Image 1 (cartoon, each protein chain N blue to C red):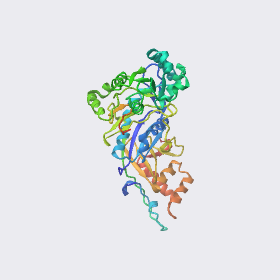
Image 2 (image 1 turned 135 degrees about the vertical axis):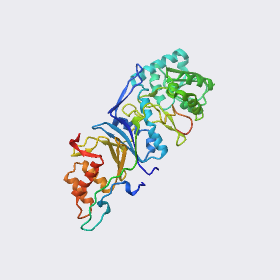
Image 3 (image 1 turned 30 degrees about the vertical axis):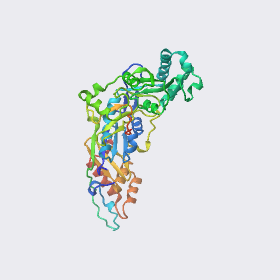
Image 4 (image 1 turned 120 degrees about the horizontal axis):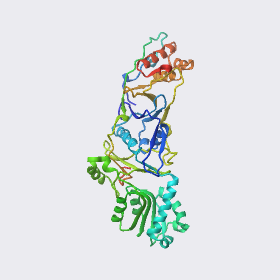
Length: 60
Length: 384
């Protein structure tokens, strides 16, 4: 899965250092991705080009 | 595939959904969010969304969401779910077993009136799989059919073809394409009158087309000014005998198809299945990708707007209240899980094992906790 390095939380534990006195750094969270609230679409019908039943084409 | 994750909030603030058409004589169905997720997971389209999972949160605010990685065509399919749930929850005709029995009794009477008792005793009956087999089985008892009338037979004579319903007529068209019968009566329980008219007009081999109940077409009111163009569009997309938008029928064995145009992929795809298997046994769920976010009993829990779940080696977190999303992996992911497991000593040991020798697991856990709290993803249990 592709992702950019700055989009996940990072901590010193990720580094896997073996030194005895590994410096501790506070993890930092960064947002990544998008949230869509489909409950707010009101009475519109996005993506509603539809019909009941099957069709004869190989689309189904 | 899109490089960034997406989260879609499908249901919020309600722990159940009721399907009802408001017509007398038809049962309404009330399903909880887990059952709804099971129904959705039986959809053919869901099987193709391989990098996605559903999550149901029950407390304190009931929510159902779909999280994952989607290309544009897949995202379109998920977005179309919103109107499908909203529309079909008010236009679903659930035909329970009692109603099926009554409908079959009426179909038997209709055949006696239209075809005549004498002809019925000489006629071969056949069913369109699979719903038609159920109806024909019941019908055979009401009509007192002999077993030999239900065996396939080549030759002359009238053949009565039975189905549970006919919406576009696609299945009946397929049947005709593979049948050499020259004298056919198509009998079923539900269809629109225009469909039956169109079949009789288009197929000289069809003597009559009979149904017990008429469906109503809501296309004009649903599509409004776009209605005419909608008709023209679907004429070019493999129309069978009739294009319409009636109530969606659901029998205990099958939920009827809906064809949806995916304008990104430029193809027709099947609509989402909405009725859980306890009401419609065709809809067998794919429970592997349904995750439950139950009440957390530890000292910390996700804030009320958070949905999260695992996808491969990652944990995806969506804060639907603030419209933000996060992805955790590695130690961050383990810290998230350990904190939600109560911040117990075992959890801390888990973190300690993950960290290199000489690290400070307690400090690690505290650091993550502070960061998650600062980001308003976690809070202490007594916070609300």
